[in-house]
Length: 454
Image 1 (spheres, rainbow, N blue to C red):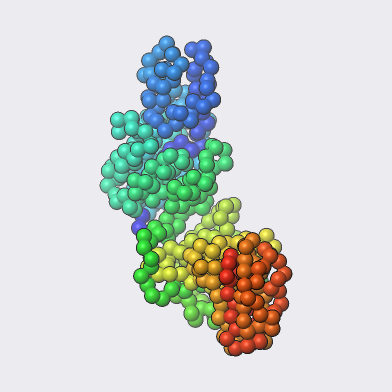
Image 2 (cartoon, rainbow, N blue to C red; image 1 turned 180 degrees about the horizontal axis):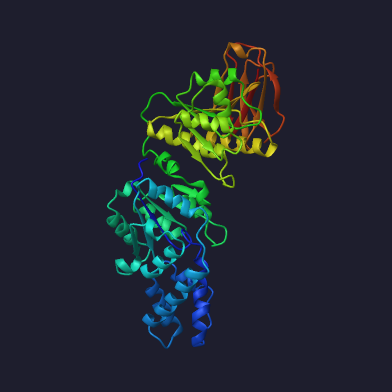
């Protein structure tokens, strides 16, 4: 999707400063002889600072006005911003990428503008922002309402549907998304946020800026609101970065039926060797050769680069890109994945889990093709059967249940089954033989992995 603007929260999103607002109460209030309720931050976080000060004055019966307490809180925060707070890793580089691309940036915060600017200036990023908006600028309306985001949008002069909001606070992400903004939820492991809630109320969920890039934002597409209208599924080929590289012959065969090709890290080397140019390359590129990276640039292939310490696997990110491309084309999705099943056992299990999840939800028809075998993921009430062609006759076939409740039928085999109950990851269907033309396998219940050996 097009990206026309970006709106960032400040505390916890741009600067690692949530501790400042947690600690300000214990730093300032004891001078008035008051003990601090540990839950007070949770009660005032979403409101403007002056609103939070008024709550403190009222609840604690402080002998000062909210305005006086406000100035004391601000003085403490400014000192912390200038001397003790650091920028969130990767934020400056990401902001610079957006700025260099001509995308106008804004800050929308519950913190007063004066203090936000002090925080930005201390990190050398104030000049990157076109405007800074505080909830104070919209009548003190807190972030459970979208006013501060809408005012930032007005000042940017951009389209809401293509202006991203970046938030670390669950209530902020929820509000912005409900208002119609695309949202990036930035989650960290030390501010006590709920990752499940943040995933549910964001379009992109990231742990670090190393998982973000302008290309990733542009690659995103909102889910369709109705069934795809395209009659033919989009055939996406994902070339993984397994140490056991796909052969040139296997890759060339798979490419013939592909509409869109994604190379994942070392998988770009296989594409280079086969002379097959992908439409997209992604990963941390720690295992792709320098020669291949140069070749990708020469071929003008968009490269979506991530830090090596990202949380999502390269395959998970590639699957999301495939989904977004299908949405752009208003088509159903058919996935062929190659060069992903070798290497470490933990990686292989994650691959199986990811692809099984896609099969269960009906997001795509899923198959894995390697040099020695082909696998299909079948799920009841979704893509539930595999009709084998004549070339399968005489080959070994194995079936493995990927869910606790799994029932299987098969015909045309040496040992046929009729609604047979399988044990999760059991050996119930191992090493059968295809004996008849027109043989088939069907998953009657649950999720099933079918592996056909060459």
